[in-house]
Length: 204
Image 1 (cartoon, rainbow, N blue to C red):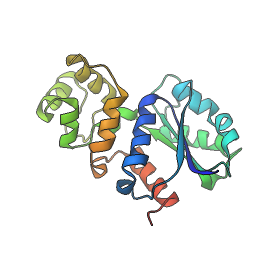
Image 2 (cartoon, rainbow, N blue to C red; image 1 turned 180 degrees about the vertical axis):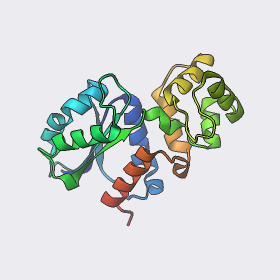
Image 3 (cartoon, rainbow, N blue to C red; image 1 turned 90 degrees about the horizontal axis):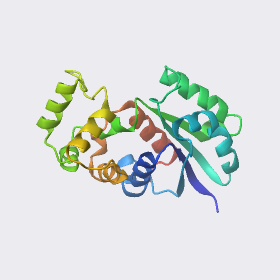
Image 4 (cartoon, one colour; image 1 turned 30 degrees about the vertical axis):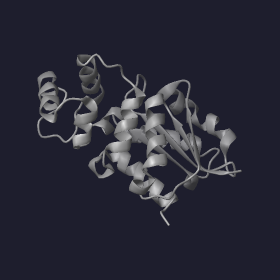
C-alpha cells in the first residue's frame, strides 16, 4: 500500500523531531494526518548530500507520493552557500523524482537552531531560566546582541547540557517538538518545511 510521504534525515535527532511533528503536531503544522516513513542516512549529512538520489530511487511513486529530504548545512565539505547546496541536491534528485513531488530542506547551521524558539517550554525542558541562558550565551559569544537566534546554537545547547551533566539525547528534541508552539519557531528552514507540507497535505 502506498504512503503519503518518505522523509530522509541525517541523524536520530532530526528523525525524532520530524516524527513527533508529523504524528503529534500535524494540526499545528496545518496539515491532515498522513502516512509516512522516516529513514536515517548511515553517512549523515554528507551521505544525504552525495547519495540521497540513489537512496530514494527505490522509493518512488506509487510506493510514496512525496519525498522530503532534510540535512544540516554545517558539516565539513559542505558548499558554503546553503542555497547552492539545496539546488545541487534537488538537481540530483530530479533524475529520479518529479520536481513537484519532492523538496529539500537545508537547516542553517544545524537542527539546534530550531531549539531556540522564544517559549517558556524551552527553558523548562532545558532546566535553565531564559535569563541564565542569555547570560551564558553572551559570555561565550554564542548569541549576538539584538539577534533573535544564537549564532552557535549547537554549542550553546551542548554547554547547557554539559553544565547539568545531562547527555545529549533525542528525547530532548522530542519534548521540544511536542511542547513548543510552532508559531514560536521563526527559522526560515522550518517555515519553508511547514509551507511545503501544508501545500502537499492541506488540512480537510
